[in-house]
Image (cartoon, rainbow, N blue to C red; front, top):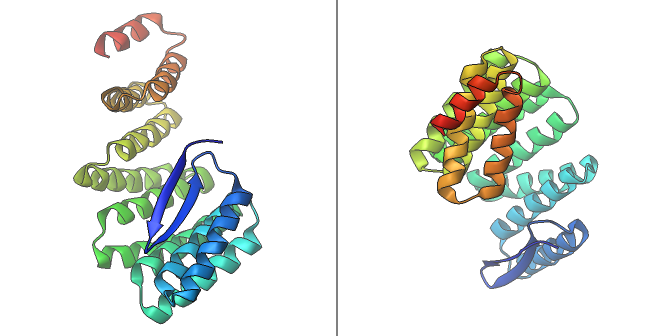
Length: 231
């Protein structure tokens, strides 16, 4: 079992595991929903329903996931909570993407994006852009569109100062350039990611990036040595 985190929502204390025990997590959030119902707090209930939907998505129980997410969406619409609506739409997009229904997935992620742009929340806007970009990359193989979404997402993460997400987008852009045969540019993005993780003190992630750099240059020792001079 990984780290235990405590979250407090209006006096409701819950445990959630970073290396998750899904069955325990489900019990925790089901209990939290009951507490929210007892306190007549639909906002909390909507949030917890979305979390359960996300857990069931990770478990690939998509019928159950959609049951909880749609319940959250219905509550959010009733109380006009646009933030929860955006989360629900995004989660439905993820379910459809996991089921390889990419057109429907993009439709829901785009709805979430449109709503989040109206709210002006740069982090959630960046999340939606990244999700759409991943669908264009991995599902539809439209790398030009994927790159446009990734670049827009990375710019917003820069504006809010989210270094870890900037690093993630660097790696996604590296992968796209690798597909296109732009190996030098791919490595440049990996080096950017490496430097971010180095500054954050995340040695394991640094090691993963270094192994990727070595893999990209395994047949070009001189270039590899030049890369390490830059690092």
